[in-house]
Length: 97
Length: 253
Image (cartoon, rainbow over all chains, first blue to last red; front, side, top):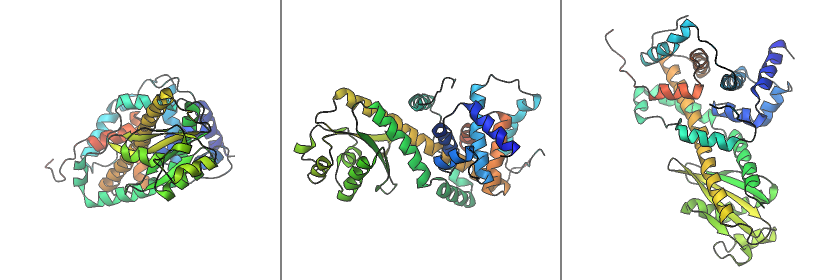
């Protein structure tokens, strides 16, 4: 088990979600792996495509956002939403990076 | 806000979602932005809505229903395809599965009646039941006497029906009906929200992909990083994007 996977597992434990609950959130985000596969992946028994991993990670992170105390936003976060709206409605404005 | 959501509290979650009215279907105007987007969206939907994964969600619903309605042997839920054919179903045990398979094979049964008539269906003694003359005796021979079935409807869509079975006659009273009816309504909202959330995210991904010339995975990853940096849940972000007015392409500035 690699170091990132250990961190992934720790984040899942901290999220206080049962496997079915996590799976539902992941499914709602567009995930296609089954609940059994997600369970096996959490236990390091199987691998998942990177894209599926990212959806799963995001489901865990959104949950962590819900249950942790709020953190103070940095200045760039003040403009993140405006930037987002601008960026999306104007189409090809390109990335900041 | 969402604190205290412990395991087994899906019902609360569904109720919260209902009052928040978070999930709205994408506005029709969206389709004006280009055929390529429609194509991307169609492709994504095809990938995203696999039967295997929906089955797992339904499985959760059935176990909740069986445990919620007292005295039930088992529970089953059936969703209907867009063409109106009963297809995807899930059940708590093989008995319910055989009873369901029988219903759809015969084209008659409590679930089909509940779904087709948008009405609660109660059968207190299947030995004397005449609404399903072929199905009922077979159900009795499998050890079932009572059945309760409620239609699952949300947002004007009849998603399917849910049912519970019991061994004894007269197992279900008005209170059980009430519990299953409310449960079905919540389960329907849940099913439609999960679909709408996936649909909104797929649509938003398609929008980003089409506008920036990215493949769907890269577009999705970009949405994830926007969701992280703006601290907005992905489904909410997708909803905002889909709801925001689309500007004409060639503007002078």
